[in-house]
Image (cartoon, rainbow, N blue to C red; front, side, top):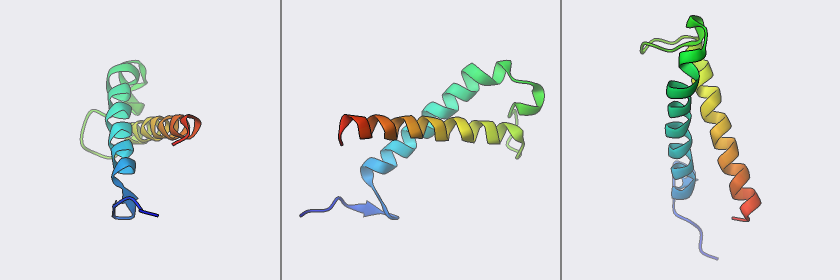
Length: 75
């Protein structure tokens, strides 16, 4: 049985899923959520703040949806 080539313990498909989740999660946070959040939950600078946590949660949620879709699709 041939195995997929791995980089740092993950296949290229998994890395693509990570990338899509990060890009889509950041887009959702920046363009949809951030303008409507209280100032304390926005992330305007490169510093660590509560906005980073909200952004991270959105990215993780998008990744979870990608994995769920992959699982339901049967791959």
